[in-house]
Image 1: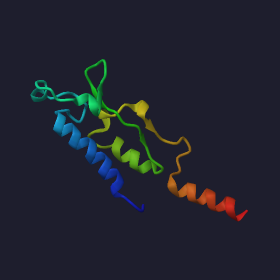
Image 2: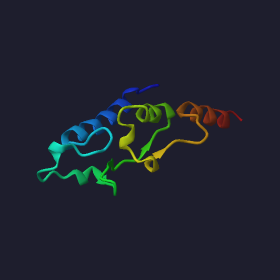
Image 3: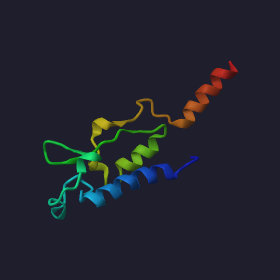
Length: 105
């Protein structure tokens, strides 16, 4: 993997926003964060069940990156409808191999 820190940067971004806005890893608002004029709606939307969900779409050419996020303590934070994983598995390596085979034919 050429840039293994990309997953870490994206995951750390959402972890930091959760800390700053008082949102637990499960997407639940912490007691101390209920007062004030904090604009949580800039980065999160509030679902009908009071769950805060990041305004994000998770997609990556390398399925291990998404699996790493889904296996982290913040896995319940994300909306499953906003996560895309190719049904063919693969990853970035398979894209290169497929392109290479097309050029050599």
